Length: 108
Image (cartoon, rainbow, N blue to C red; front, side, top):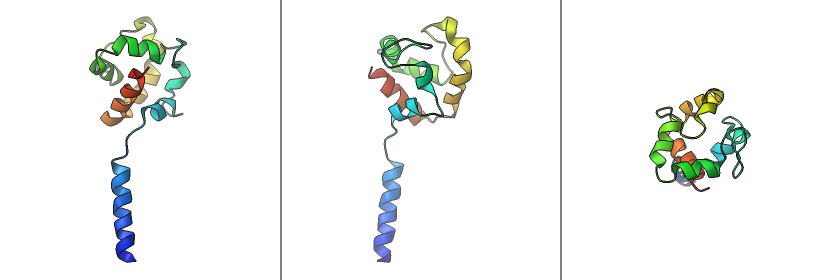
């Protein structure tokens, strides 16, 4: 029984460690608060996911750089100062989380 419990614990740990990060969950999560300003198909306070995807569809690395704070905004740069406080939350995200978020956005 102890061997079974140990094996089950190892499998559960390995499965959890390799579980895919859900970009949609990150986007909608109350901590990140992306969905407050960005809607899926309609521009609102911020550009919609559809608008963002159209601008970055051929250059996902530029979107990743922007989300990491390493590139200037190419969509509505005049509104970026309003977004800066929220964008700071992205600095706490791992590369894997940013990748998942970009993948989710570009599906629109």
